[in-house]
Amino acid sequence: KVGIFDVSHMGNIFVRGKDAEKFISKITVENAKKIKEGMGQYTVLLDENGNIIDDEVFLHLEDEHLFIPNSGMHEKIAEWMRKNAEGDIEIEDVTDEYSILAVQGPLSKEVMEEVINFDFDNLPLFGCVELKKENFKVNFDGRCVLSRTGYTGERGYELYIHPAEEAIGIFKAFLEKGEKYGIMPIGLGARDTLRLEKGFLLACNEFKGGRNPIEANLEWLIDWEHDFIGKEALIEFKKKEEYEKLTFLECISQGIPRHDDEVYENENRVGIVSSGNFSPCLGKGIALAYVNIKHRKIGKELIIRGRRDIKAKVIKGPFVKKGEC
Image (cartoon, rainbow, N blue to C red; front, side, top):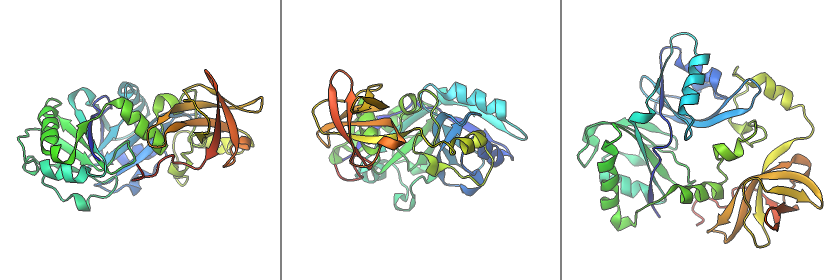
């Protein structure tokens, strides 16, 4: 019902300056002016060809925005930001100075309340706030940004802690105070299974090989009413009559799909698996795959071809809805 993750492999980049909103609107598909202080947003950064460089959450704090790049991407993203910066912009990569803890699950709010004195009931999804030392019920001497975000599809919170070593005491406090709720530390393997069951994308899998947000089922993120890097390329792409699009495949025969397994209809190759695994909730294999748009009708049966042939059917995602398992 509740777990704690150390996700300090993720990046932390602050963007500051009077031109910050204009800059963020340029480098992401989101019109940053619409994201009010105290809120965050999930978005993507594109190259000039419209392909996804990274998917990230950014948080609008009082005088700055905090970007959370994927693992191993922070240096590349910071460099790319500086390359595209115009006007009054400051970009500070503080990844090595911060730790990130995530408390996730249906009982996450109760565990958070044991350690932090804050009105969690009034923190909306993607809401964010900078906590004060006085908010902590345990010894804490640092800076902490709190957001109601996560990568599990369940209710959850993430804490961005500076200096990084201050996270040790907070981590121990969550385990101690959360024991009565059954809290357990959870690793990245389990986190990957949870995100796949909800249909969340993984950067090194779903964005591999130059995929764009239309292919990746992320067109809903795009605010077409503003200019951004890659926009013209996407407009041209939308004219295509045939391409591959991210698709939910649920296995109907034994087997576990794996990354880069090919997808067939009869003997025709129609796609490729980007992420695959066994779902503990469903008791069967599941996969996200890029499938030709002419072969991804709901209910259609396909073959995933890896070490063995696995029958699978196209379903409407997610594989597991919030609170189902």
